[in-house]
Length: 533
Image (cartoon, rainbow, N blue to C red; front, side):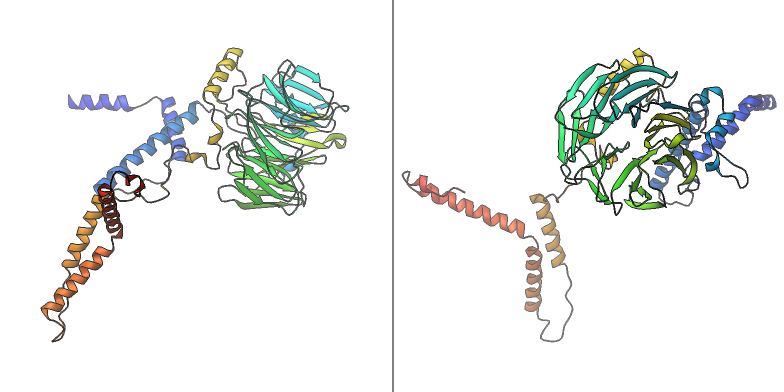
C-alpha cells in the first residue's frame, strides 16, 4: 500500500514535456534577476540577524521569480540589434541595405517629406509614438498619425515658429511663435495665447506635473501650469540668451546650456540653480538625457560630445572630432547626434559609446532636430527641406505598457487616462535632483534639549561615579583622611560643573521669585513701575 502511494506521488510530480521546458526557461530567467549567491546563514550565531537575513533572501527569491514570470509572459518580444560578421562594421550598413531585409510594414517608416518653402523643421512625438508634430520655421504646423501615415491637421500661422511641443496627449500642442507662444487643439483651433513669456526660444512639457516650461530670448525661464493657467515660476537665469533646453525624465529638472560652456539645472521653487556644471570651454550646442535620468550628453562648439554621470556629476566619456547640433537618447540608450547633413548613432554595447550607425542626408539637407520615436526602431530627422525617417534597429522598447503609453488606445481610454493623469498630478515642489527623498524623514537640524529629569539622572550618575573612584595610596603625610575627603569633594564638585544648564535655570528661577516677592511688597500706586520678567 505504501509503495502504491509513493508511485502516485511520483506520477503527480512528473510534468508534461511542454511544462518541463517552461520550468527550465523560468529557472534560467530567474537566475538573471537573483542578487548573486545566497548568504551562508549556518555560520551566523546571532539568531535575530539570521532570521532577518533568511526572510530577506526569501523576499529576493519571490521578486526574482515574479520578474521572470513577467519577462516570460508579458514581455515576449526582445529588442533587435545590428550584428556583423568578421571585419564588417555596423556603421557601414546603409538604409537601402536594411530596407531589403525587413518586412513591408517596417519599410513604410523609411521616407522623406520634402517641403522646401517652410523649413527647417522641429519635431515632437507623443509618449506612445502614435502621433508626430512638425513645425516649420516659416509658419507650417502639421499633425501626423504615424500608424497609418495620415495627415490629421495642417495649418499655416503666417509667422516664425521656433519650437513645438505636445502637451499631455495628442489633443493639444504648443508652438513658440514670433512674438508669443500659442496652444492649439487637435483640429487647429487656437485655444490660448501665452503673452507673459515673451518671444520664446524653446518649449518643453513636464507630463507628470502638467507644467509647460519655456526659455525666452533674454534667458528667462518660465513654468506655467496648463490645468488652470497660472504662472508657477518666472526665473531670471542671469546667463544671457540660450536656445539649449532639455528636461530630465527621471526627476523633472530642466537643464539649460549657456554660451559660457556651463549647464545649469533648475526647479520652479528655487530662484538659484540646483547645479551649475562647467561642461565645455565654449558655447553648449545641445543637451540630452538618458531615459533612466542618470546619464547626460552634451556637445560643444569645440567638436566634442561628452557623457556625464549625474549621480556623481563626473565626466564618463569624451567623444572627439564630432560637433553635434542636436542630440537625442532612445529608449534603449542609443545616442543620436546630428550636424550639417550627417547623422551619427552611438551605441554602448561595450560599455563606452562608439559608432553604431551613420546616415547622410540626401542632397545635403541641413539637420535641425533628431528625435527617436518611442516604441519603434525609428529616428525622426527634421531638416532644412522637411523631415525624414530612418530605421535604427534596437533603438525602441519592443513591449509597451498600455497603462503608461498605448498606441492603440480608443477615445474612451484616452479620456479615462486623462482623468487619471490629472488625479495623479504632482505638485511643483516634488521636482528635485533626488526624487527618492520624497516620503523620507527629514533629519533634525539641531539636537533636542534633554528634559529636566534626564539631566538630573545623568547628574546623579556622574556624582555616584565620582564618589566611587578609589584614590591611590600616597606617601606619608599625603595620605591623611582629611586630604582624601577634600579630594573626594573636589571630584564631586567637578562632576556637578558639567551640568551648568540646570544650575543656570535654578538661578534664573530664584531671581524671578525674588522679583515677584519684591513687587508684591510694593504699594498699589507703585506696582505699575515694577520690572516685568
